[in-house]
Amino acid sequence: GPRRPGKGAQVSGEGTQVSGKGPRCPGRDPGVRGRDPGASWQQGPRRPGLSPQWVQEEAPDVLCLQETKCGGSAVPPEVRALPGLPHQFWASAEGKPGYSGVGLLARHEPLSVTYGIGDEEHDREGRVVTAEFPALYVVAAYVPNAGRGLVRLDYRRRWDAALRTFLARLDARKPVALCGDLNVAHGEIDLRHPRANRRSPGFTAEERQGFDELLDSGFLDSFRHLYPAVPYAYTFWTYLGGARARNVGWRLDYFVISRRLEGALCDSKIRSKVLGSDHCPITLYLAL
Figure 1 (cartoon, rainbow, N blue to C red):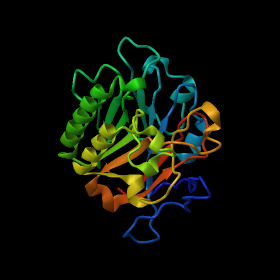
Figure 2 (figure 1 turned 180 degrees about the horizontal axis):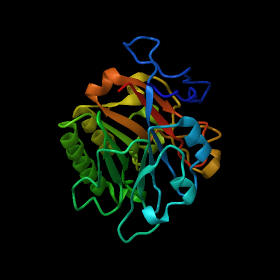
Figure 3 (figure 1 turned 135 degrees about the vertical axis):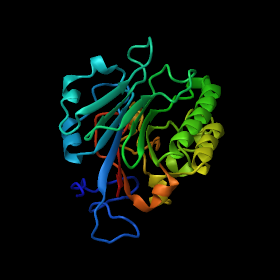
Figure 4 (figure 1 turned 45 degrees about the vertical axis):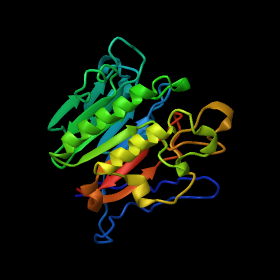
């Protein structure tokens, strides 16, 4: 049966809140609660940021972590011991300790697990882990930043195209939930100061177009699908200038799902009150 949902999240800024009394599935029996299959948290530049207490309270079926900066052998013991998540899979950058890295932790053993996206140019930085479950694939991703001065923008565009190809191959077999730090604010509503950031990494026309093309290839931005007009809903705040206290942020973290999962989408939450990183966690509820 469905696991107990987590408490409703608050996405706050300028008095705006998205709160919930637990997820309900659109178009379904209003008494049916959704499972909590996935949570995602970008760990940021200052480790450790993970809160075992939050993980225990949220009780996800799958937890995806980004910017872990360590391989499997260096995972802190408190993460290894997280309750209810015994199946753990870690990717790290080749020859670059302390750089990039993702983890996927699961309550139930996946049918299969793969690392990378099957493209040699992109698979050395430890940015993707994919777990296959009976109903769907879960893809944990940490998308490369275009870099200061946009020095990696061309590389980022190649990455975006390669990721779309990879997701399309998966989606041809069964539905997909892509989660993680996708390093793009898709619309002007997704960052506090869009005009000042037209050529900033994460908000260039090229990166936003790449996200458009991902959605156009058969996917949904789960949060914006449910909350198309909610402002000030961010997942990242720089450590500089008290940005988080003033909610001067960006929405860079996403659950992107196959369009055919729309009927199973119960809720997509931003856990903006949870501290521990310059990103906050996000949670997806699906009825599968």
